[in-house]
Length: 338
Ligand SMILES: [Zn+2]
Image (cartoon, rainbow, N blue to C red; front, side, top):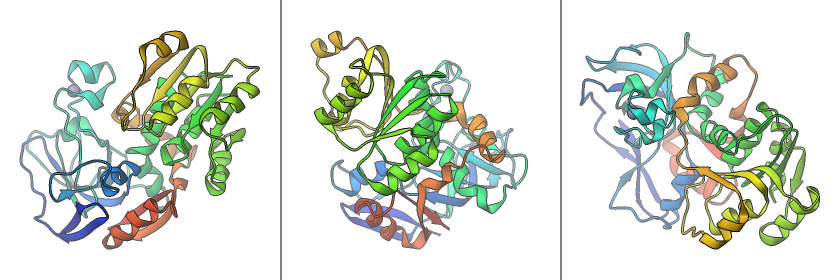
């Protein structure tokens, strides 16, 4: 088969690779129905995160099980499955506490931008649907495997409650789906911080009540003006830069909650500032597996349509064009069809 490999910044190739095969009795092999480019793939693509030689890419996937190892019990060949970007046994203490993305046996998935994929710890990582879903639901099911799961965690970790005022920093797919998640959790006012018209539109469609285009100190001032100078109850930081993190903390009311789900790049927090900010901080790699059964149900029942974040669909072999489109911000998120 052919799969996606990043050679150096800007150099993505779709090239011959060995077919994946069962390596451990807990593995499954799946045939991917759809995969996509993640904004976190852009860090190494832009040279902002070093890579050690040619690196296989992709960690978002759904598809049909081809083969399972002899110890796999919960999924079987022929089933449609969705999995998380982090593998988990779903039995260790961290998993039982709901932090499957810190499973003691965790591996981060890669190689998903390919037609076939090996998934370790299949029983604890994959969730099967009862039937094969209709094709028009596949993008939304794919979204549950990372961006929706991460947006949902962002809202959950920021303790979004019915009636809350919520701010979402970041208008990438995760931020937009953080808006959707906050809406599902009953937030009353959802302020999306975005400067891009298409993303503002989608944010409103997902449930944003207000848009703030300013950033940094100006953005913070706008939020304070909108909240009687007090700040928001829950702020979702979905970018991972110093500016976005500080923006999030400064938009939050005393006693409020900040979640952070964008992989931090050179973010530094100062103790004194944190001390006086009086906020709760909770974030990290989203334990998507915790939410998968719920999110898959919401999609299958037609209650949410997170697949709308995919505004460009390309054949998998054009993956390099997909990276370019996201790098140049011509696309929010690119779906790749094997
Ligand atoms: Zn575990």
